[in-house]
Length: 354
Image (cartoon, rainbow, N blue to C red; front, side, top):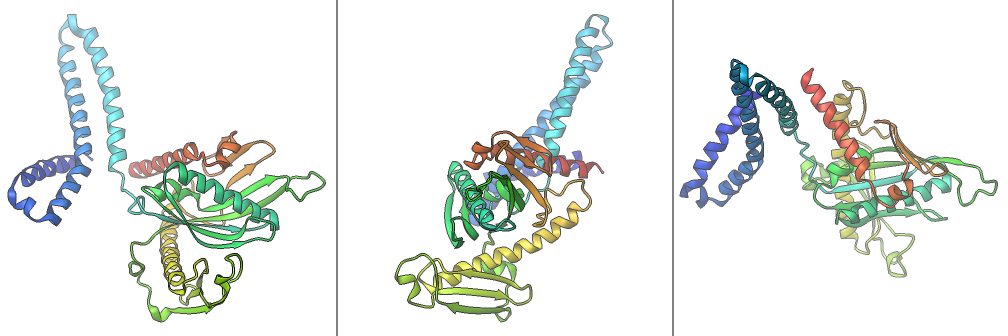
């Protein structure tokens, strides 16, 4: 670790010198790259200098141990210095952890009703509202991409696009099975029912071409849209269904009157789904060596239970239970998302130590 930090410190000095010369600023692309690299390295090198100063302070205090009059003071300084060095070392390790290249991306959030019939569809609607409220708290933009409403309210399936800084980093651990325990509105005996929904969080690809979709691998069907939308939506074959033949992934979009716009939206979702499959395969391999599956993105895994009678939410991966279900369903997810991110970071740090 120290050798890498020395290299970064030298690189920062080099960047400082390069940015002072006129040649570096004449090419804007080169200038932007260097300033971006400088901004990334700067805080890490500053922390490393603090670490080196703390080590130097310990060395000075150890020399003072030779003086009987300074021995007690020196011992206190050494203990305080060691504690500071340990804290700085942990901070440096965290900053050196590999960054997820998708963290800053926008996302497609897909919610599907599972077991539980109408109650499951209603819960899908509740989950959509929860994530929408969380997006509003983060000042993200929410765009409806595709929806399949159920008869009693809620959704059999719904896909939204969340646009905002760090959207994927905050919600990437939401993929999986979400279970709800409550008394449904249609239940006359007051019995608690258990239903489930599946959530998928997919980072948006920069361009559809990023995932190398071969047009020959696509079957594109158009059909007349159904459902909400008034008189205009049903008059033309504006709805689009795209099937990716190699993987069998099917995407439908009918929310816009324009077939062209529906096709563009469907292609974006398809690219995100293919990218997501690749990510999950990679994450599953990594997670196989860890004790938990936070980063696996396994859709079949039951990750969380929302128990309405007890007012609690339990995330089974990190054994976290919060008794503030009303707040959580209103989009107050910060405590939960921070806990999941911290656990993932701890796993990465443990892997470095192996």
